Image 1 (spheres, rainbow, N blue to C red):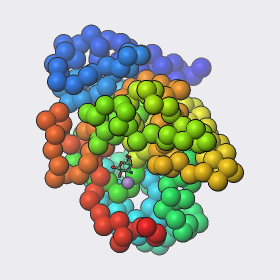
Image 2 (cartoon, rainbow, N blue to C red):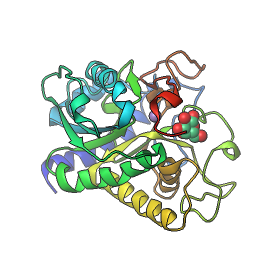
Image 3 (tube, rainbow, N blue to C red):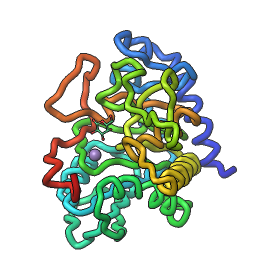
Length: 302
Ligand code: GAL
Ligand code: MN
């Protein structure tokens, strides 16, 4: 193991065990659960000390690979996504954005900070938004395999129809990280929109499941996210061969994956909110949010 990998392995554990769980701020939130039944922290505003976290993580020259997909009219979201990320996302860290698009010529020029860069990769156009969203797993699997090995320490895979409004930083790092879905964080488990047909590989029976995770944001170490994307791609392929498409496509398979492979850290819906004009008592800060959109205008099919 290289020294840096060892450092990462140690610090993510120290962070999770000491900085988070034992810290006085951890006890600061009583209105929300701040730890899962398998002892993974759930990150909410008021549960971490951002200056302390930054001072620890910034010693290591970490690079965060960050992927987004903008096909068809979704290219209209790229500018706000990148500009707001430059303002709020892993400020002070190395960030390498990978943008997949079928229209590279339409990618706007966005001024990047020091140690921050953008790589644009051309992908083929697809006719159904369901295929576009599902196809991401395979593209991510191949990106990690072919290009990231010596280029990044962590990866986050994000939706592009989004915008940052506040800090998203090193408090989010861990080897496998999921984000709790903004519409389903305070509803009983039987209302989770898991795939309920046993014929699908994404099937989760009634009474099972921990959380409902958003498909629009997940991340972790290259190794863990490679395993996640490879597994989801394989399960999607099996479903396709059986002529079944899970109710929320790759999000359904991600939820199945996280049921069987528990994330070591969960991010609260502050990290993937409904939209900037919606509020909830538990949400003290909106860090990253969906952008309201006219589906008929931006999607290639209903
Ligand atoms: C919606 C969201 C979908 C999917 C669904 C799950 O709010 O727009 O992408 O996540 O929730 O129920
Ligand atoms: Mn989206």
